[in-house]
Length: 294
Image 1 (cartoon, one colour):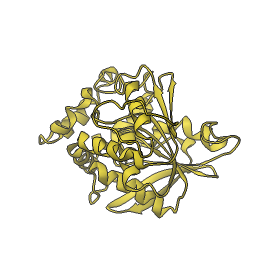
Image 2 (image 1 turned 180 degrees about the vertical axis):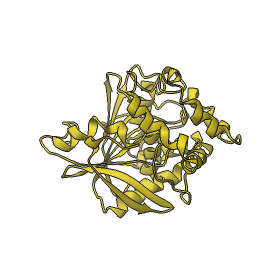
Image 3 (image 1 turned 90 degrees about the vertical axis):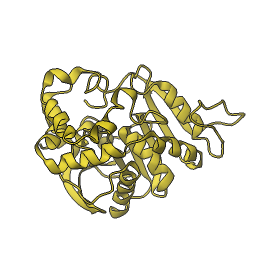
């Protein structure tokens, strides 16, 4: 299915293990978007035009940006990557390889949902090309996946289950349930966007195989380990979190904010204590709930 024309021109780049398709719009400092599970670049169809055209004040005033919105191989991509490492660290390495192949520096990473968990891993493995990060409600700490989706990794180990899951999602009546899009979107997701998200894995066995490989590798040991190392990431992080989010409570944002203080040791998975002094380079912003899948 085609992606929104608002995302810009279509390009492809060869990365370790396969080819990634991405959309590119605007000029200026680069902003790279990292979406979550079973969505694709269409997630950013309303965000990219605004950022590319004028920029958000929280990034910089009065300037446009070059917005790059890839379809990461998380189940809604069009190009299979059969030879890629699709473990969570492997996907983080793909993001790093994308930045390197396109020779992008001082990049702003904007991440959401599963992509936020991947980005936290990225920050601990390949921070060199990243200038700043915007995390919207995302997998963090022990919530990788959140409890309502915790059945997916063990389910993916059952032969035939991924096919059954993708075929079941044909039923639009199911799309407002908590275990589908019900808790990840503030409003109903338009039918054409849902088709953009769900058709690739439904129709292509190779895409389903990629999805299955990723799901089987998901475990919160990766986000917990990343959290241990986040104090070493000394660049600005903006946490734009929805206070009423059901999957990722705002307490996760406060924990991330505290644990991003460079050199400040914290213990996991307990909540971070208040720092003895100083100001965090991480800002926590509570905003009205935003759609992750819509």
